[in-house]
Amino acid sequence: MGQVVKLRDMRQDEYDVYSDQQLREYVESQTGLVSTEAARRKAARDREQFLPHGLATERHRLLVAENSSGEAVGVLWLGLDDPRSKSAEMAWIFDIRVDPAHRRLGYGAAILSAAEELAREAGALRLGLNVFGHNKPAIALYEQSGYEMTTQQMAKPLR
Image (cartoon, rainbow, N blue to C red; front, side):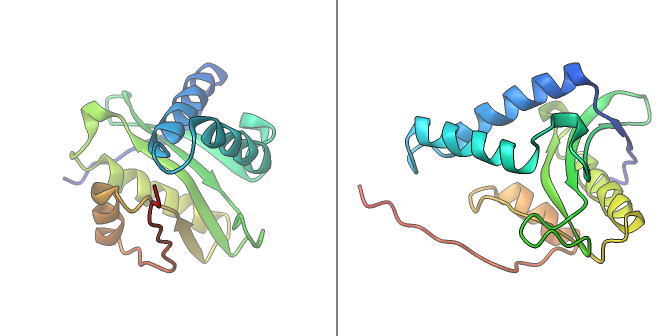
């Protein structure tokens, strides 16, 4: 479905809810890989490293995606520099979410397209992201949108 979204800056109250939800989901995603406490510590370190000033962090955009009716359908955290090299040639999607009630309707692709346009406008030549290997729907969306695997990590539980 060819959905269109409008991205707007996230408000502080929305950021507070998003931040709590993102932490909770990250910790849940690490269940069985590391301890809950280790996952919380890593999430806190990552937040301090990549988003130390919350909504006011330079070169980071935290955005709410709205559909044509003005209803919030998802969020996007876009960094306008590569988090590893700090190069502006590559922007980075730190997080992209579609609200559960709006999934499988084309909003993910619309948010990706809007992110690409913002990155292009900021001078980026490429747009990167990470995705957990078990997230098959997201992987399919990214591949359908022209993203290609550039690295792959693998692990085997030993307990």
